[in-house]
Amino acid sequence: GDTVALVPTRIGVYGGAFDPPHQAHRVLAQTAIEQLNLDQLLILPTGQAWHKARVLTEAEHRLAMCLLAFGDLPNTRIDPRETRRSGPSYTADTLAELHREMPGARFFLILGADQLLAFKTWMRWPEVLQMAQLAVANRATRIGEDALDSAHSGADLSSVDVPFVALDMPLTNISATAVRARFGQPLGRSGAQAALVPPAVAGYISQHHLYQNPS
Image (cartoon, rainbow, N blue to C red; front, side, top):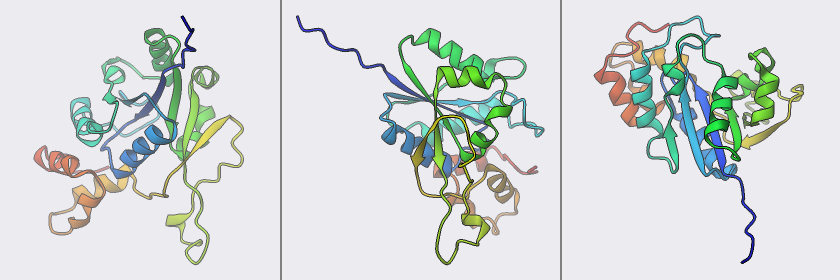
């Protein structure tokens, strides 16, 4: 019979603290699925991130919020492996594990612009480059009358000297820090918080009284 050329399965790997997962995370996940033509997207909440001084919210809460934030996206699954590791968790270890589990797959590591700019501070970053193509949320600087507004200036990636593919997505200025601060405010002042996270995540945060003393 005819030989069919096997096209490698395209797997997106999207790690982060997701403390909490917010609308910009969700838009980036959707953008990656569409623009990278992914067969599967893995969401990997970090364990205790080695580079974050702040103690993260318990993994069970972050996994539950990820399920609420991303669970309805096509071919997307929440992968808890990094939260189950003792000690610091490194992307190089995770990618090596995934390669063993899915030999022949093609991996795309999905990053924000800020992560790309710090990429060479990562442990064993050359190994990461060998195992996955970097796909970066392109936060292009706006031009026009609001160009001087810092909220709209994107990261300048022109100096980055590692190969990456840019994902084209609208500039978002949501940060998890801002979301935590918003949920830490007394009710009544916090009406805008619901727009920052998927509604189910907002409900979960309220139900479990997360971020009452934000840092």
